[in-house]
Length: 322
View (cartoon, rainbow, N blue to C red):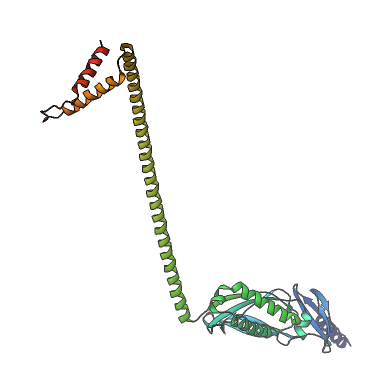
């Protein structure tokens, strides 16, 4: 009887321990009772009925390091459902762009299981389904773009991929948070052509910058010469104006002096009651005779035909200065 009691007690203890399930934080279990969905276990201590209650087995994906650093994807079965955000690093795949260039692309997918029931019952192999869906969607998106657009529009590609994948995986209870393209590797011949094109573009920009510099230098030099010429012309103008003003003032002063002299002479002529015209004519005769006899070779002196008028004028001058 004691042995029977011990055996029964051991069976009860084993049965009780088998019914106790401790679920870690950020994980869950889907429990089936007699092959039918029963409940989802929350984090913490949970009690189930052994034998009749069993956790649902699902397939998980894990990447491990293989030979020479190569990544190996392994599929395993487990009852744990991880509710944290997960990252799938997909291997490189060949895609064809719109301009028929074969390119290698590998992507990172960040997703999270938000509905454990759908992730278990709506899809058989969730990791494999996500991987294949990502690959096919990536081919469709890249096929709509040319190579240059593919290399320069990563944000656009990521946004399109995320929208398509999030909509497709919604029925699986999965939320796709973001998609990132790690590497975009065009063929070697295309890379060489792109490098040559890039080098040619750099040379063209250098020549343009050099030409722009020479143009600016020529413009600055011409502006400097123009400013210098304007300054010189302005200086000549100012000098000419000042010289003209000086000459004008000198002539005005000379004319004023002559006017004063004439006025004095006229006053004296009036005082002697002599004809002013005869006086002026006499002075002009004398100036003319002076010019006629000023040369070295002038041996002959010409007198006016009517010399009596000249002598009369001289006599009038004499009378004035007495």
